[in-house]
Length: 363
Image (cartoon, rainbow, N blue to C red; front, side):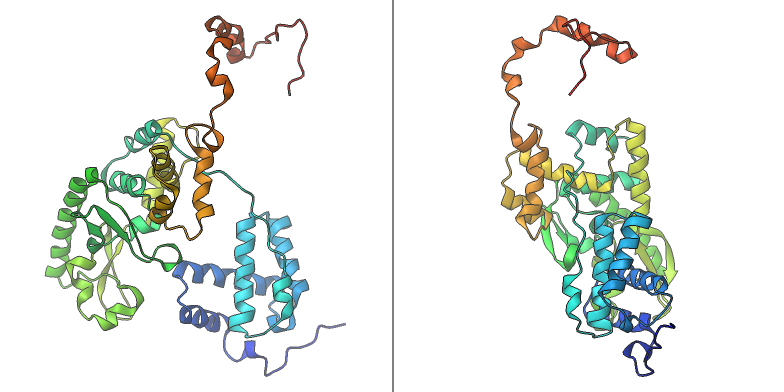
């Protein structure tokens, strides 16, 4: 039996679905990255159901799509939940369909994972393998605990050298916060700003020098897009033409430049941990806790809405799980120096006896 045809007055057919979804997201000030992600999931959901009108679907189709992602494509739980959030937004805010089954769709349970943390020596080893702007940006990630895009989007006005503060504008959740600006970074950042100033003046001399302003401020503050205070701390090497305004603008340095530099530095340092740009933020938090910073202060510096998110760093302190030392560490006489030679064969793959005359089964 052929599936029923969507009614001609179906709300999803009045205007293109993608256009309506984008308008709904911008009305609610979702970030551009969230907007692109949601549109991508809505498109894949539409394709999965043979481009049929989503108004006709229910919990069965949504669950089938999420199961397809988990079993066939094997996406992570967080990715599956992002797809569900996109579909919830589609039905509630785009199609404006009030369906009770939306609240009954089961969310995937995210596994509890510990963050990857580098020791201070490992941080030094990785950053010492870097140079130029990527090296300075990596030190900002570690010294201030900011996220990757928060570092890339820093503007001149966000650096307060006198108060030793770095202001994060519209971070995760579009929230502002204040974090540390290490004294050791003052001179390197001032030197970077001098390079930026020369480049900006050259842009101004040829009629360019514009940057994008947030939240439509380019319409309210006409001309401020060329002022020094709004310029990027880490600008891109090339400019681009903004079609709507006709302005020649300069974007901030693309985040992939820093991501590649960190990846190469980790490999060159010989560190076997799966370290990324975000690992510097984890290391910043863990090292502050090791130095005695209280958990509430750390929560403010990191911009966590929930203290439980910050508490995860208590599990990765340098003193073992939950900051507890093993009782074996207080009994050094149990491990003698001559015992070390008994296990030397393990490195060469030799079969080493357990010492009781029998082969052990492990465990």
